[in-house]
Image (cartoon, rainbow, N blue to C red):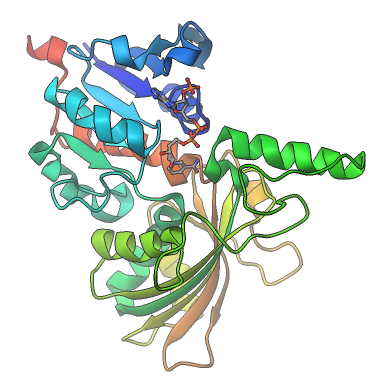
Length: 344
Ligand SMILES: NC(=O)c1ccc[n+]([C@@H]2O[C@H](COP(=O)([O-])OP(=O)(O)OC[C@H]3O[C@@H](n4cnc5c(N)ncnc54)[C@H](OP(=O)(O)O)[C@@H]3O)[C@@H](O)[C@H]2O)c1
């Protein structure tokens, strides 16, 4: 018998993608249940060919659930993840709520799958922020070879990273501009259509935003606490796919050619780097794909050993839903969990 999986936040951007990925990868589930707020009770979502009727979180019985993929925001996770874990399900959470809790592993399977065993302490595993995820997938093999000292990153983050309503806002504002309707920003602090906004999440005392701080703290937790990182996170009018312009400084020499070879062999990475018009990946091509794409790899002439590159991935897949499903697969492959019904 297979596993019983609950997807909490099943009507959201990430939740729907989770259901699709579970079906696509033929995840060994006997049963998948879709859970969201009371507002969505009875709404249908798809898991492969099957239509699932959404159940309400506050009345759902998790006692025979093995794996809960949680994607309903921090406030919901804070209240519900410990309760669901207490019922014996492992919770894989997409929000920022548990990421820096020392008793909760923060996992990107290509980078630190071995740390997943630590889930036993709280029954919860955290999925990193979307911008961190694609970054560490590319940094890990380079760090193993030449030891990263410092990273400077500027992100170009799509509106889907801010949820369904944010996507609707980009669509509505774009339309409003063509038909000269008035524009009233709601989800973003300024107009997002035909604009870029250098501000994601709240401002902190030092002038950085929380999104920028998350990239620093999460990279240290997943990859190496000695890596110095500074980020500027920017929202751009793209529906799906986050891009990053990244400068990396190494302790040992590393040429662009060698980095290209290392990244070609690295799990989760796809190098597309032709040094000609169109010989690189943009978010438009990355949307719907699983890989972290790396393009424009070149040597940085301003430091002793440094590279500059362009990293793009689908934020709803590798940046959220795919990574969560890969974590669940890692738990199964490493025999860290057992189906309750099988065990009974
Ligand atoms: N989008 C990304 O790229 C990305 C990447 C990494 C992490 N995340 C994180 O993933 C989470 C979800 O993001 P999203 O983009 O999918 O958001 P979204 O599209 O706005 O969807 C939110 C989901 O949460 C559910 N929900 C909200 N309040 C609830 C409650 N009280 N009880 C039960 N369900 C509730 C919603 O259900 P209803 O439809 O019933 O309201 C919906 O299914 C967030 O924590 C986000 O930070 C997102």
